[in-house]
Length: 392
Length: 98
Image (cartoon, rainbow over all chains, first blue to last red; front, side):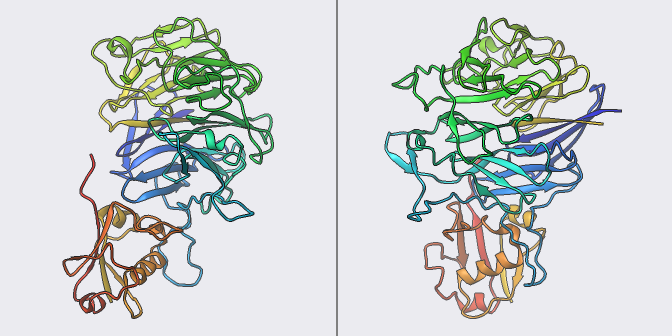
C-alpha cells in the first residue's frame, strides 16, 4: 500500500511524518539534529530512502547530512570518525567554496550590496537541495550568497556551476531582506540539461546545457520597487513551480504578483486575478492536474501574515486568474503566521495530497487536493521547509 | 595528551560525549590543536574555522587557563598546562540566540 513521508525542516531541527495512503493518522519522528536550523530536506526520486538535509547554524556554519534508510540514521558524507591517518575521510561535505577567475585567481565577481556598493560573495548556508531525477549521488544545492553547487559523489564534495554567478548580470544581483539566496531549483524531466533556478533578489534563470551557461528569464516581470521595473535582473522571485508532464509551463510567486510562463520562462504574464493579496511565498502544482495550482496569499509589505488573520490556501483550476479560497480546517480568525517559500509540497497519491508548514509550527495536510485540511502537528518550531515523498 | 572541550552541538556532530583527547606534537598551538581535531574528527571541519581561510568562526572563542586566546596568533605556543594536559583547551560558543 502506498504511503506518504513528509520531511519537515524547522528552526530547531528536522521532523519526519509518515502515514499510510489515507493520510489520516501520522507517526512523528524527531527532532533530528535538535537545535540546528534545517533549511531543507529532500529525498532522491531515484532512491526514496536516500535523503539529504541542510543543517546550519550561526555558530558552526553549514553541515550536510545524508540518510540511506529513509531518515532512520544519518551521516555527514565522508565525515566519519577517523581512526587512522591512512584513508582518512575527506570531511568536505560542508565545503562550499566559490570558484575564482581562471585568469587572475581573484573572486569571479561581486554583487550589489544593500547600499548600492559592490560586495564580495560570502557563503552563508544551503537553502535548497535538489536531488537528481536519475542518480541518487547527484544533488544540486542552492546557496546563500546566491550560487548553485553540485555533488556527484553523494555529498562528499561540492563544486560550483559558476557559469550562473559568472553571468554578466552578476554585479547587479542584490540581496532581499532574507539574504541573497538561490532558493528554487527545478529539473526538467524531458530535457536532462535544462534547469530553472530562482534567486532573491535577482530573478529566474535557465540553463539548457547542464549548468555551463545561464540565461535570465525575467521578461514580463514588473517590479515597482526597482528603478527599472522591467530590468533583466533585480526581481524578487519567491518561488517557481512546474508540473513534470509539462515543464515548459512555469508558475511563479513573486514578491508581488503571481505569474505564469508558457514557454520555459521566455515571457511571463500575471495571473494574480482575484487573490486577496498577490504577495506570498510558496506556489505548487497539483500532481495530476497541471492547470491546478496553489498559493498562500500573505499581507505585505512588512506584515507577512495572512490577510484578515485568516489562513487560506487559494486554488486555481484554470492555471491562474480564477482563484477559490480553501478554508475548511484552517484557522479563520486571529491567525498571524507565515508560510515560507519552501514550505509547501504535494504528494502523488490519488487524490493528491497538499501540505504546508507555518512559522507557528503547524504542518497542515489535505488528502483531497485542498478541500479539507487538518494539522498533522501543531507545535513544532517555526517551519522552514516541507517536502513529501510518495512511497509504494 | 591534549584535552579539548567543545560545544555540545559539536560533541553531537562528532559522536563524542565528553572532552576530546588528542595527541599533538610540540609546539602545542591553537592551530596544531585544530589540525588534530579536524584530522581525528573530519565532520568538524568548517564548523570551528573556515575550510579555506582558516579564520575562526565569529561566534566561537578559544580559552586556556582562564585566558581568552581568541585574538592571539594561532601559531603562538599555548601554556604548559595545556601542553601537558593538566588544563583543557576550551572552544566556547557565544551565549546568544533564540
